[in-house]
Length: 334
Image (cartoon, rainbow, N blue to C red; front, side, top):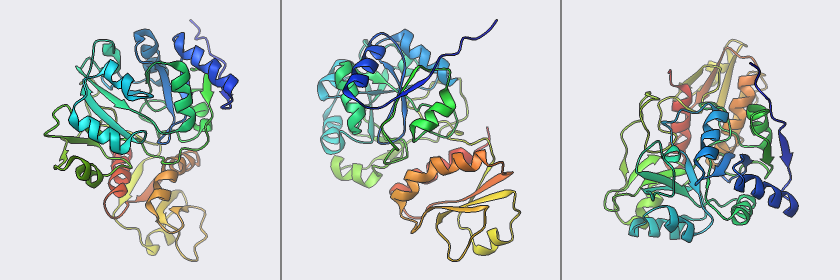
């Protein structure tokens, strides 16, 4: 039995193309879409068949739920049960890189939520994706647009390399400006908000808005059969095929005498070093630059044929927490 491959096309964000891709989504098709965090693979969130196609294209287990993307607050009220905490966070951070977990309404099929009675919702800030959402006129479920478990895509080219022949359309919105997936907060109980996944919006920012502590969720396990409350909670995720080895600090002596078949990835550019197996994420180690380049650089090193990739952890709180979360999951053993 042969598998039919789909011709995958990349579209610029012209009004004509947006109208065309909106029709694809309305008819139950899949579209790779740009967001400010990473690229997503979108389908009509109310169409169970279309959402099942996301899981097939990615090789994603049904236990890992999808994030539903909305254009406005009215769409949230049509699919979930909001509360005061959700309203406060939405007013402060939407549109933006924040996902809220709330009780769902029956219009959202169980395929989207791993069969759980809750749904993860985000109002993205990327202007092109917002135009597509508005034209489509319905919420869109969209996990990252890559084979499940692999390094997330931050360009249309990344999506094409991973899903060519499996989806028909990719909307090119340029490189992702944040480069890490959204912060996810469980606000089903508004008095006890829980941080499920760190992101560009920090715990301190959340606490300033909510005026209460934001608890830490229990660490995600490695059981792919068990329904997860939100995406990105499995122990191993965002992983290149090349083994990743983490270091609290990397000294010059570490990489200067390292084997040439081992890559070293630093937070900032070292002085007077020009070794092909040594690279960095930001010239000054500025965390926004580190986050923006992290997944792209991991992909480059993964494709370069190194035996392993040594990576330095980020320092500090806030965005460093999100960067290190991705690195620890990338380095985890299954």
